[in-house]
Image (cartoon, rainbow, N blue to C red; front, side):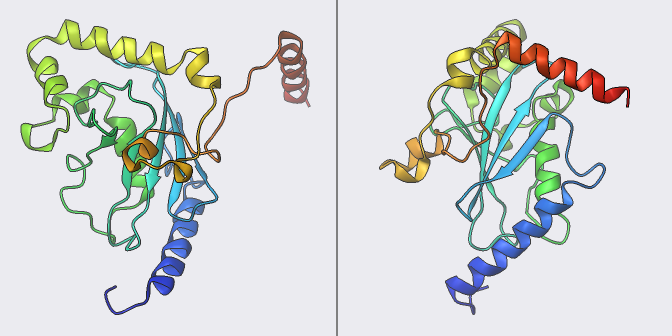
Amino acid sequence: MDDVTPETAARYRQAEVQLQFSQLGLPGNCPSGVYLAPTEHDDELSGVLFVHRGYYAGAVLRFRLVLPLAFPSRAPLVFFEGNHLIHPLVDARNSRMLIAAGFPSWDPRRDSLSRLLWFIKGAFKRFELDKLSDGVVANEESWRLYRSNRPLFAKLASQCATVSSNQSTLFGRHVDGHELGSEAEAQRQTSKEAIAFSKVEDQDMARMRRQIFQEGYH
């Protein structure tokens, strides 16, 4: 895309993102427990991963996909929110997930947002962790623990899950990454358009339950 203007490249990227985003609604394209939403920034998508099993069971992990101007020819960058996640593929310095384990070379004819979401979810499964190798990890210390001290790794992963799902993390105030001066800090913050959680009072929860069950019988 070297022969096109940045404006043309941005329009092409936006059209491709809209197409791939719409295709996530098709059966099998978006893994269960993963939710993705657009933001007001054309180069970002906001996501949440609910981990149900494995070392990180119970984790609620926010992440952002940062789309390069050359997308879909180039792969999105994946950043997890906050700095509490300890994972062999996640750089502790900026919370960026390396995706080389699943995408040694990004091919737009084969690779897509759908495949990337499946990779992100799979990265928290024991089976996929077992397949990692030295050349694709971002956190050497976490990777060393996974191989040599599995009980300690499991404890740290469980602590990460606990931190990610506590009230201050879920309901705390988040900052728009585009308003921050530090690029590294921006990657660790959830932008204001990110998927947000809100507290639900007991009476509201009871009302919603009644409504759900009543509609289920119609």
